[in-house]
Length: 112
Image 1 (tube, rainbow, N blue to C red):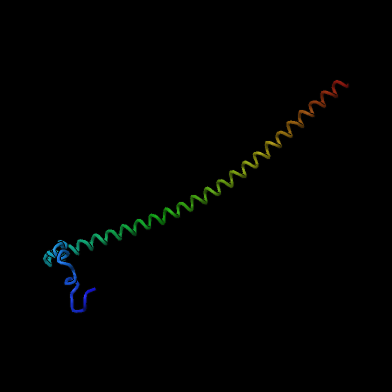
Image 2 (cartoon, one colour):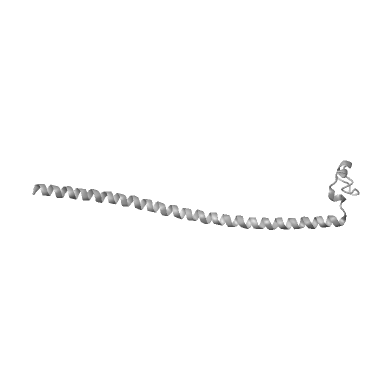
């Protein structure tokens, strides 16, 4: 760690100062332009991030709505399947009753 009387750059090794970034050698005006440009990029990035967060929120809401719709549809389908099974059973019973009635009618005709 640098002592209080040393600047942070004084504590850097000579090789670190030789390989300093290009920004260190820029004139003040160019540095200000660069900072303004970076600020604009940051603002655009933040705006895009906000937009993407809103899109994600909408997609999550749509997913929830879709899940609820799917659940309701599944319940309705199950209800219809149960009713169809009941109606098929009832139909089968009626067919058997009809066949029995026909058999009994034929038996009465042969007896008479």
